[in-house]
Length: 606
Image (cartoon, rainbow, N blue to C red; front, side, top):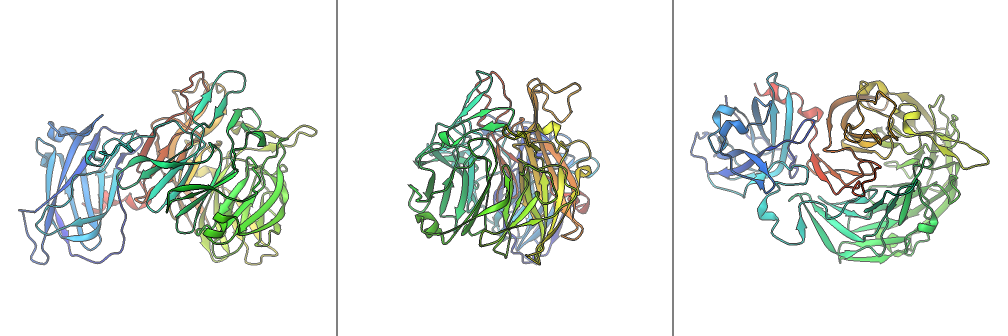
């Protein structure tokens, strides 16, 4: 049953873990203790061991199990334990092996540091239905090490290890509801700030307000939230945030104090609700927030992108106070210090087409960027523009295109030199309505959208592009008609699509099965988490659905963030437009998606 592999070197190191049952939260967890092994000893290397404890979950976290094998997760017939890194080890665990306390001893593990521990729960057909990983693990020869490591959290981050939550500043859930907030990765941790925290459901146009200025740090190692002692100067939601340099500073600009739900646009706000100051710098080195001396226009529905170093920031388009899109364009370029101080270079220009609700990406290894969608006219030249370093814009002809792609989400899924493949998900059409402001269509009334954009900019004066409809990859069970959703790249070419709005108002019967059944009376709100795998490189790109699960509740305007261990952290959001003033949520949950690399592990261990 047990196999021991010889130790081989590896540099693969990841930290922390979330263990989730595919498709929904679960009530059992796996905890890990290390012990000096008293069992078999290899003649090749000194060995140690590990104790796995299958324990139930309570509101207080992990508790001792009185039920033995009855706590084995539902539908899981066995666990595969796989350790890689300096030491290589694989074994299988069955319910009959755990004692009445839910414990099973796993001897024979070679010692090593920087190890990666993967757990796979296998069903009766040897398919992976649970998975989890912990990285940066150290196993010492014949010695105990570390307190328990908890491999899961329920909906509100419970079971994160009680010994870690002994300082008053730390909590295991957000202290206030949030939507349309900002997040910024800083090393292995995450900053959360801004956002609407108040919902006013009265009247024909329900309103959202931002009232709080707190900055929250999510500790990815411990799985807890900490409210920092310094704050933003002004509340703001729907703002933009860019991490500068090595992550020691975050530039925050734009946003609003208040917005209203409307038919067109779906959320409306104006410069009269602009926060003051318009731009701020969060300095994580000395724990201060200062005003940035930048005259950055506050355009709603503008596209913002930056390079990995945070030294080149693009701001393109947006909606002006009259409801029309703009063609404004500018680069901020310089060092983190010069951007923070307002002395960096600013280069201004104009897009060829006015845009609102577009997306943008600064292209790797170039000084250019792409701006996608959000134009008024669905014509071949209005879909994509290349923006050069001097703020000159070059159109790319695409024919045909299925609409204007406003409020979509996009991710670069492949690159080969000056060629790129970009995934586009969701979005709506904008219809010209002269002499009145343009109209946003409802997602349900727009063409289904999961597309791949192939881009060749090897000749910057004559770039070419192709747009391919990949909606069939969703298999008819995932809606691509949505806005205010999240699209996150878990690893190169692996995308996680979650949440959003398909339709406001009671859906026409029969309601699409993708709509959340708990809130379908007021609209089609989505709770799905769909994992997509890209293939074929830049020349023949494809998208395939790998797995599909659900968040604990439908939500839109939430944030989805990849943690260092490739799990997803979902934060906040709104679950529907209803008379309930508590429709904004403070929910936070870990989702550990089954990735393509996990799929065959149950069969491999046989």
